[in-house]
Length: 384
Image (cartoon, rainbow, N blue to C red; front, side):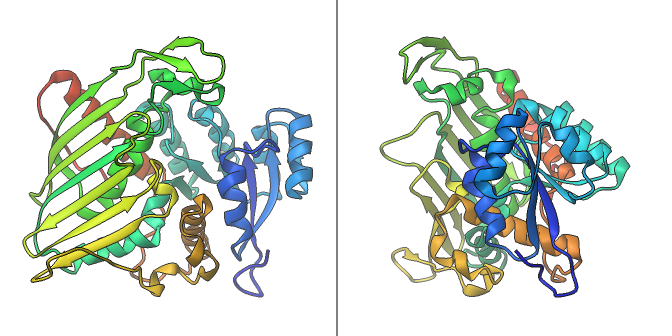
């Protein structure tokens, strides 16, 4: 991979959690980096020296380490990317920040708000650039949607409704996801599917002013899909949130655990002059593959709204692969690269950072509080 400029060295990346057996790093981060100028996948760390060597051979990564601490100390790594399970984020991100390295962490940043605040405070003290994997914000369809709303496509926004399936939180589980059954893991329906989704909603329409919520665990026992063993589940599987946005628009969000035969993801924005709809065929809609539809004025039916080419950030190789899980991650990496190199367009926002993650964690905590107290909760400002 080459840099974006002949006289600029590539950003040297070290990935914590890249495994030869697969996983999110292999599915999304490796192809995203391979398809971008300006980065070099230079190093990786895994759970053991043996697994690190195997991953290094499989992905042709020259430097392999048996621990995140060793990777963070390497002078040949500029950006540390953390792609492991949420419960391990704090212990693996902290060494990179202490070494003064830029860090890209998958969302959620921490298992809870306190962990996220600790990491954001440390990053601030060290003065390092950070990023969080909320890739929906960088995806062309969502940026186009935000601009359509801002430019008055629907007129004044009156309401928005979002219905989603959670993927996690269903009647069954496999060994790889046994940890999400525990609410203390931080990898819950509220944190991951709902967290990605409410972040996208607020990016497009603005923050919540007040919320009411119901959060329930209607499947306290679930079945291992392989062994048939029944396990206890403390994490939620139903979330219903209603609220008022700072604009005055009414918002409703309902996320169900598992999958639905009817609707994977559906989001409507209704206004005085028109309507916009976002659809996806899979529960993890933020991976990519969303379709936009709209109608306004005298138009009687929705029509698909193709995303203009200018939203592709010159990433033309991803134009026909918008449903690939690496596509949204590639767009976030492209934005991060431009931020690191100081080449962001004047009207372009940077990537969501650790402070943004803290605000999102805070919003989710307030939603959980609203469900606990059984009444609406007025919010302070939560983020950008």
